[in-house]
Structures are given as C-alpha cells and as structure tokens.
Length: 353
Image 1: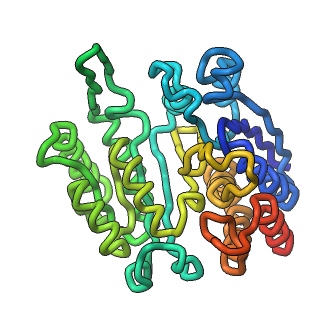
Image 2: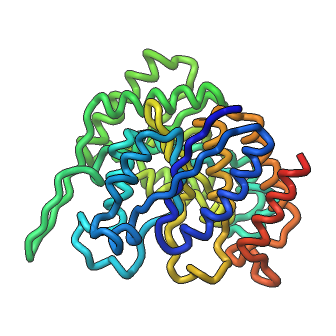
C-alpha cells in the first residue's frame, strides 16, 4: 500500500461541487492502485473569512505544509469583493502558495478534435495544439509592495535572479521531455523586470539546456500568436501576471475554462486546482464542469503521488467521456449533462480500465 495524505480545500462558489467530483475519481483511482488515501478537509477563501475572519485557517495552512498534496476548488465571490486586500478570499490563496513554496505553475492546454465545435476557432487553427504553460507563481506584481491613498495606488513588480533561474530550470526540463521548444514571454521593450527575466532565462538555457530551442516573445505578440498560430508553441514560460492572463486566453483553444487543470509545484509540495474561478452565478445549480478538477487529480497522481499509470487511466477515462458526451452546459447547449452525471460516467470509464 502507498500512503497518500491529501488536504481538500473546497473553497467558494462551485469549488465544493467540483471537489466532490474530484474526490470520487481520486477514491476510485486509489482503490485501483492500492493507495491508502487519507483525506483532510480545510477552509480557505470566503468560507474561511466567514468562519474565522481570516482568508485561510492557520490549522489548514499547517496541514497543507505537512501533506503529500493539496487539492483546491476555487476561491472568491462578490460577497467579499469590497473587503480590504488582506481580507479578500484571494489573499488566502496567495498566502498558501507562498508558504507552500509552490513557485512553478503548470497549465497544459490540448485542443481535442471532438470539442472543436465548442471553440471560436477554425479546425485548421486547432490542429496539433498541445502546449504547456509554465507560470512563475510566487513572485512579481502579485507579491510586491502595495499601497493606496484616496487619489493614487501602486503595486510593485519585483523579480530576483534566483526566482527566474529556478522557474527557467523547470521549463527547460519539461521542454526536454516534450518537443524541445521553449518560448519565454516578457515585456522587455518596456519593463526592467522583463529585461532581467530575458537575460537570466537566456543564461540558464544556454548553460544547462543547450538542446532546447529558445525563443523570446513579447507578451502582446504572444497573445496574438495564441489566437492565430497556437500550434507553434510547445512550452511557454511566463512571469506571474502574464501567465495568469495568457492561460485563461489559452483555455479557449480547449473549448472551455472548465476543462483545464493545473499543478503548482515547489521543491517537495504540490497544489492542484482547475484554472477556473468560483463562478458564483452557477454555484449550487449542479451544472459546473468538473473536468478541469478531475484532470488536476490526474496531475496530482502523476507528480505528487508518483502513480503515472493511474494518472494515464484517469486521463483516458476523461477523453472517452468528452468524446461521447453529453457534456455540461458550458460545452453543450442542448440536452446538457449535470456535474454528478458527468462524474459518474468518468468513474465508470475509469472502472472499465
């Protein structure tokens, strides 16, 4: 038996609904792989604010730092949008990422032929799209000094050499495992942080990954190319804010924001979550797309629990369900499936492996 201690953070909005689906799939996979699964639930985001006045329980934070992996739903919502910055739900997520030391955010994007009709793109643009975004997650403008007075506000963007070096190494290793192409995205024509970013990434790649083809692209051009020629990309390396924006744009290539998983990795710990938000407008209606969260479970099985065969099985089960439908309303306008129905079909397909 393999021990697996996983902290579950449902969060806000549709977070508890998609986490319920993910847990069912994780439990099914654990049975198949003889994993001794121990789940521990915690509080983060608006739900934590309502209960204790802080965006993450201190006990939850400590449990996350002691677990094998953390699985998160989503945080945020209009109920807390007028809170001061340190008492917003997102502050709990930023604190969690920082204290877990998960500096490398991986967001795979695949265009599946069966879902091409649900995207705004012509089929020829989607052909061959299989890219991986590597986003630096614990530096940059989100974590810089902030301030505000009645007439002005500021957010400082700062990067240190060591932060850029370590994320460049992650991207370089991943590019070596794929098609050996790395596109580093910055705004070096304007920003000093981007000029340092470009310099350090070049040094790391030339010194440690000479077999990887490196290209530097400005962030505005990268946004355009993601729309016009997305298949040209393999691994994309970005700083924190650029990666946040571009990964949401890239989700349109897959068909829905609800399809995309992510993994946030440090030296030892892993945090897994779908890239979508809390979607409070559909919370409680049973129509949220659980696929991004289920695929996040697959990434967790592969990267933190070291069960690549189980990860492959979950991904095959998802592919089978996506190819046959019906799907949730974000993808299927007529006669859509509900969250639980879709989850049941994924579990059945996984059990048939």
